[in-house]
Length: 405
Image 1 (cartoon, rainbow, N blue to C red):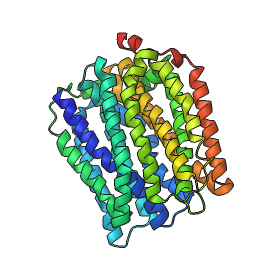
Image 2: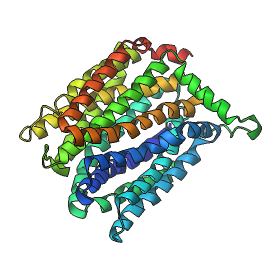
Image 3: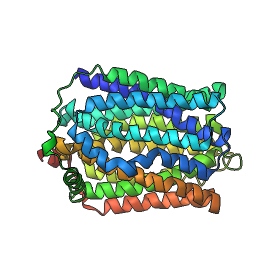
Image 4: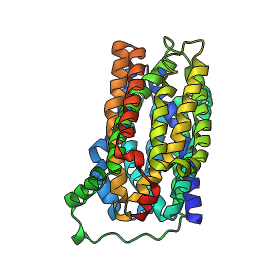
């Protein structure tokens, strides 16, 4: 599968840069621009707001078009936009409003890319190989998660957060050029006379939310992203704040790197876990572990912060690495090719919409009631999500049944 190998290579290159920007932007906002936890939440929300505004429509449009050209164009576009951030910094014109605009624009292109990306894999590999293919992609992401924050921490220390973002811009450029070399047979665009935007949009929504197992998976996924963004915003501010855990950018990058190592291990165990328990039970068990992983953060003190936060990230990303490929493969297996983009963007767009609400909420809780309240709210929220999924029909979901359909 040479096309998949090139796709995997392009994804690996770009995701390394993405982790540099993820830490670079948060450090830039808090330490360079002097923003509050609430403003950090606004930045996180701006990144995902396009999914709320345009996600469902983009899913319809992507299902009508060839996916490879979309992947190439959006990668190159993101490279150009990210290059503008250090340019503004060097010109002394980088402000919080300007940063929000650029992050929003990158989010628009990422929305289109993600819709095509998740729907492109089933065109590169047979369905029986989807779990392995998705696991390899997630493991590449996990390796980048391990090395990316360390690279970001070092770059930020040497050249500053704005210039470190250039690494991500270059990674998108290389990824786009590599994707352009993939040879793949894609069905031609649907004739214009056969298109009905509202009808196709309703068809995608109905597929997800009327499906016996996809519906509870999607709904609990939306709730999970709300809780995760709430907790993640409070956690980052708490970890960096001198009045909190005071880990600093490098200390936080070390903890995140521990999570990356665990995600690689989890991805290698995903196929084994699916064979032993099947898709639904494995995902339910993984969700049940997540609250216990995050419980370590509010229990940490400055003297124990690095150890407990690193352990928290290790356990969290171990189960995330295990269940991520299984969840994605189940979704891809149960959904026809003509609905892949709509299914993916329906779920992903509302997940990102949850981030738009959850990230500022987490910042507001931290500022108004303190970090402890925000962190405990996240732990309890994760426990409720696990309970809801465990009581739903998804607990018996099977990949074998999905592939039959």
